[in-house]
Amino acid sequence: MTVIEIFRLVATEFKDLDDDKVMAWSELTAPLISKKVFGKLYDQALALLTAHRLKMAGYGDSTYGTVGDTLRIGSYSEGETSVSFTVNQGTNLLVDAELALTPYGLEYLSLRRLVVIPIRSAGEAR
Image 1 (cartoon, one colour):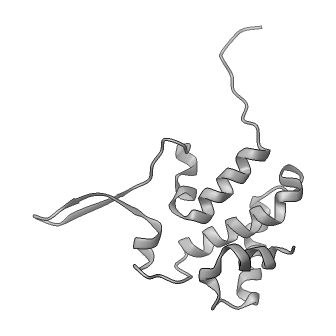
Image 2 (cartoon, rainbow, N blue to C red):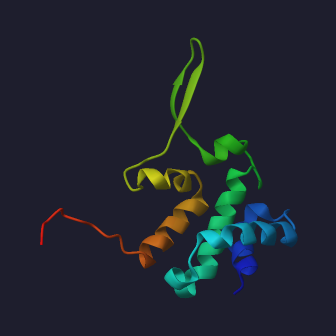
């Protein structure tokens, strides 16, 4: 399957977006993902990250509005009105917090975990 075919399959909320716009965003996203690292999962990763970036840019169906679809309300106050949004950091590193804001970003993180092995240092001397 091509990137655009995968995109259309997993990101149905962007059905009204023409292929040229999707491909333009895909081309902007491509340098952020390594073909060598993702291998046969590259096109899927590119489609997911493209969908994530489009969603964050405000494209797609928005039943609850852009903010309601991408962010989770963490707290709400009524007097002097205060609303804050949160992301569950239990399974995501702080640098990946933005990816956790959309289902596409979360799926991309799952794919990345399959192909990228983190390097951990226990601080041991040789």
